[in-house]
Image (cartoon, rainbow, N blue to C red; front, side, top):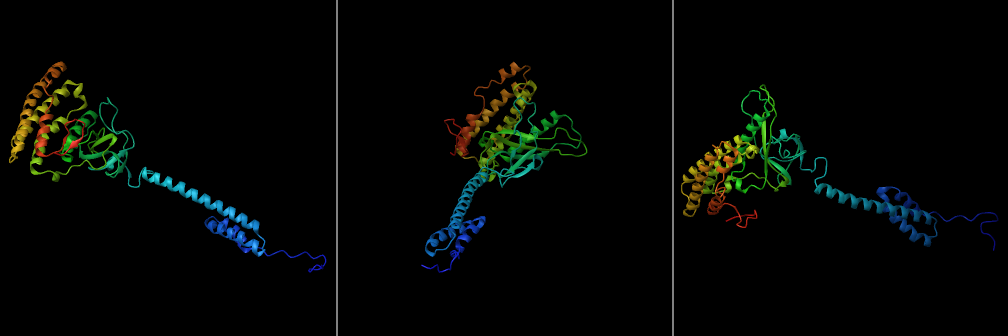
Length: 360
């Protein structure tokens, strides 16, 4: 048969598949790789039927497009999981999108925060004072180690260079602020009490602010510890107000009470005075329901009895004598207070003693 193209003339090649070429080109463009993968598959299906060239290009476009799509999918899955963990676990430069970097000097009453360093001084430290001022201010409804319950300025405009004197003023000033913030200290969780104060102050200015907070190394319950007096009825408010002198005296115990006789006797005197004042105020509450009068009176009587023992201990000349005089039968008024709270409808710990509170 004669060669239709003439002697010595090569046969023309079939036309190249434009779909195959587009497949490879688009697959190399990351954002268009899915389209390149689809066109590669289309080209592989059509080429055997239309006789066009480009099967190798279609195979390459399909392979490259498939690889790019698979890699992009993997990155999205892994990256999304890591982003979820980052946001849920408090990632980011500030630990959470809701936190704010700051220092102790930015804190005000009610603020919840996480310190950059230790929350409390090491055990045995002479004064409990945070030294690293960097903090993250966090919403109180999120996990947080500490909450500021009050601030105040050191008294006077004169210079104070004695850290012990500043510590004593800071410690004494924080106690009443605690009872303004949380009048019913019975219901507070297991927390530590601390503060930040300047080590020395000049007479011409500078920061004289003391910041007092509640904290726990394991973290506080989610939510503010601030208490709303509007949640109590008139009898409950009168009861808590009456117990405030005794409670403030109790919380005024410094770390030296267990080792220093002067600190122990001074605290015993405050306890005696606070207990006697609370007993007087309890008896003066008007209009208590009949069911509450007995338990409230029993608590007042117990506080008076303890006050006598505490006043005797405050006059001890030696540590051994103090311990002997402080040996109170029953130790405290917790039993009578439990009964009074129960009668008044205030939360009490259950009788099993497991620390769980119950509403009467």
